[in-house]
Each structure stands twice: as C-alpha cells, then as structure tokens.
Length: 331
Ligand code: SAM
Ligand code: SF4
Image (cartoon, rainbow, N blue to C red; front, side, top):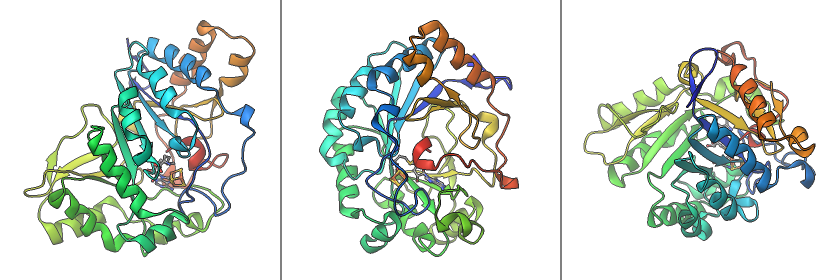
C-alpha cells in the first residue's frame, strides 16, 4: 500500500540518479568544467539500486524514473532497466535523458522494459544547441527522438528550460511542433540552482515565468485548452492548441507551487535519499547497505525519508540547495 507522508501526500514515485556524469554541460545545470568526479566506488552498483527499489516497491512505490547526469552515459544501463522492470509492483518505468545516445539504445531499452522517455531539448537551432549544452549536437538528439518513437517509448515528452535572451525567442516555434508534428513539449521555469556557473548569478534576468510563456504561445497560435497526458499526478499541467495532436505542458517550480501534490523521493547516484529536490537534507543508504543492513533496515530508512518530506520548498526566498548541483540529483 502506498505510504502517506506527514502532509498526507501518497509517495508513489522514485527518481533514481544512476550517475553524476554527463556528456553535456548545459549552462543551467553544470559548470563548464563539469563537476568533480566522484570516485567509482562512491556510486551505487546496479545490484544496490535494485535492492533499494525492491524495498521501495514494498512500500508502495510503483513508478521509477532513471535520470542523472546522463543515464545513458553509464555503461550497461540496459541491464539496470531489465533488473528494475522485473521488480513486482513497479508498473511504470521511465527515463529522463538528453537524448544524444538514444538512437543507439532506444530499441534495447524498450525490449528490456523501459516504457517511456523524456528528452531534454531547449532549442531547434544547431549552433544554439552547442552554446547551451557546450558540447552537444542537435542532430543526435533529433535522431534519438526518432528512435524513441520507433521503439514505442511513448509518450515521448520534450523538456525545455526557457531562458530569457537565450531561447525564449523559440517558444512559439517549439509550441508549433505540438500542432505540426504531434510533439509533447513541456516548458520548465529556470530554477536558481547553485552550480558554479553564471546562470545562477543571472537567474533573475534569465527566468521566464510560465505565464509569460503561455501568453506568447496564445498570442501567436491561439487559445490553450486544458488536456491530460499523464495518468499520474506529475508536476506538469497540460494544454492543447487548436488542432494539435501533441500537448503543451508547463512545469512551474517558481510561479505556482506544485509541492502540495508532490509524490516523489529521489535517490542520488552516491546512494542518498533526498526527500525534496530543493532541500539539502538527505539520508545515507549506501553506508548501511555496505555494512550489511538488511531489507528491514533499509525499509526503516525509506520510511524516515518519507516522513521527513518538507511541506514545500523555499525558492521564493531564494533558499536553494547548495551541496549538490542539479546533475547530481537528477532534476
Ligand atoms: N541528463 C538528463 C537530461 O538532461 O534530461 C537527465 C538529468 S537533468 C539534470 C534532468 C532535467 O533537469 C532536465 O530536463 C533539465 O533540463 C532539468 N534542469 C537542470 N537544471 C535545471 C535548472 N537550473 N532549472 C530547471 N530545470 C533544470
Ligand atoms: Fe547533462 Fe542533463 Fe545536466 Fe544537461 S541537464 S548537463 S544533459 S545532466
């Protein structure tokens, strides 16, 4: 049975960061030089992740999302997908990826039991893509998207972080993709995360609220009607443009709290449970796991983490996590 936290929210969703490494260096997520590499032995082994997910499933977690860093940058990820897909109680297994390696793995991932992917894509312009990711190639992501569709990893959702002066002039073009090509595009408000980069210092001038994004879309393409895309209660709100097969979504960590409906826990690549993305409080699972703790002890730690989920974040007061960058937590 799904557990309730102290604020009566059912906790049914675990995001698992499988690596803190990434083949890109997106300006809002990582400093240009990347993050200091954690030694290999600090990262959870796949068998350890499996143990934790099994215990979580017994506590009513039914949905798992693999994230990172870039999950596909970790060797043998298909095997982890296979391991998690066969855990009783896990009925929804998804991944968030930058898409650059997806063309290579989409079919294998689907065959191993992955159900869906979210792909991060902030621009449709090749040079700008390089500027934002500092090293990626747009064509790889587009090929990854195509492969995900062919492999049946539906619905493929696109995550777009909007930044004033960097890609806000593409909002309408991206939204039009929901009409012309049936894309599902989710616009995400830029979060002021400390990442050793300029994006944090410039946050106030770079952030574009969902309200503004929505106004630009409606002025150019018509009224957005409420729509549904997820069966679950994710943080996105969905809408549809006239005649569109795809949907426009908004993820609004800043302008509208979604904390009241938060159903998730996070597991960092180095084995810490994080009850809230935007709070540095964590519970170490790796040390007990490696000192021989059994399932009952891990279950008690998971329950403690569920009980300690805060009621909401404090972004409005600019209280942001400082101990980890986004790529270590997994978004
Ligand atoms: N590498 C994968 C990817 O890019 O999809 C998974 C990890 S990434 C940290 C997960 C999500 O966090 C991405 O969709 C990314 O756009 C988002 N993200 C990272 N930093 C952010 C920030 N400062 N504000 C808003 N979203 C952010
Ligand atoms: Fe890597 Fe994803 Fe962060 Fe970009 S957003 S640097 S792809 S982890």
